[in-house]
Image 1 (tube, rainbow, N blue to C red):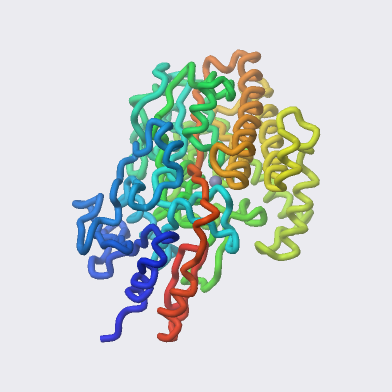
Image 2: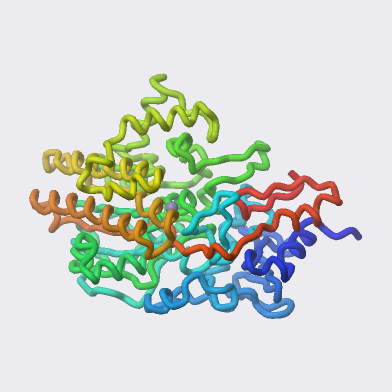
Length: 512
Ligand SMILES: [Zn+2]
């Protein structure tokens, strides 16, 4: 019998001469079938040195040949932070891949997921296909580790805790704090952290700093360089292992996971870009021209934080500020974008088209000017255009939060979520611990400080529960680690005449 194209692709990708760029590949075990919930009954992982099978009974993998490609699955690997600093972007053999079964089985539950997922090595640098000096997306622990701080009303000040949670725990934790009964939160992938927070806060506030590196965040806060984060920590706790992001550790996958409490296999947003087999088209949900349409991708049964709060507490005001997950929110930034587009004031176009670029130009002209703001390190905007764009977005976020929380007391949101993005731009531009990444954290902290001051001056801070997280971590690419697997895949697959696509790169679709 002729070999299956998937097996030829796996063999090509796990060749020793690609081991510097391919950490491992993963795919559903074709012989194992599906679980009743739609997940594959088993997932296979392979690298150049071996192959293992993961399932419910063997969540860390059972070796099939050679050695286990997942040398460690410790969510607390590279802690304390000094260990990460001493061994940044570790080789695959020294790396850790936490919760591999839970995360991979969720990812492969949706038909939008690829036939084979290719996990880049921590140091892989691929600027020719969109890679940056700082990168995320991997299954590995550092790119998957988002910060998790809980603070204020209902939280006992306990400082740092040597434990971890999952990013899918964020939604049920906020809902629990907001008084949503546990029965309304049953059946999610995540669980409310009810051992760390008591319900009853008048205001529940979720903060997301996109790609906000947890080690840097806590280290800088302790050194007095992020005073607003330090204020949160003084009245709460931080999990040193943070919140483990869903796979892949990409932006839209994990904003959605954090705010719906379920992984990509259930919400359906499997990547920033993916191939839709049913519609035979490339979908790019993480784009300035498509962010406002994220909810169109949700699979049936998905509920956002805002919908869960509205169901349990009819009439409670909720706000989603600068956040793509906003369905059901009383006030929403992207709700305004949709209203503007529906009025015909502008057209968003498709990603990458001249129309979408015009749309982004229009949006930029409407945003605050980051070059004249005390909350922005303006020289970084001149260095990096993404830093300028996301600084402008983050200033709009601060203005929106400030407006919502200056309303008369009974009109202030009971539940609010505010995403900031400059941290992602700074870390992409320079990698963790670079000057531009550190300035991005400082800028986000200054904006948060202004908001905390406002809450304090109105007497609202005491009764507010605040959670700070991110959508993923970040690791520095090594400019010496270059190369791609495209030629190897072409050599393996093209002679068979099978169509294939590598989206991302790293999402390999066969028979397209
Ligand atoms: Zn992100």
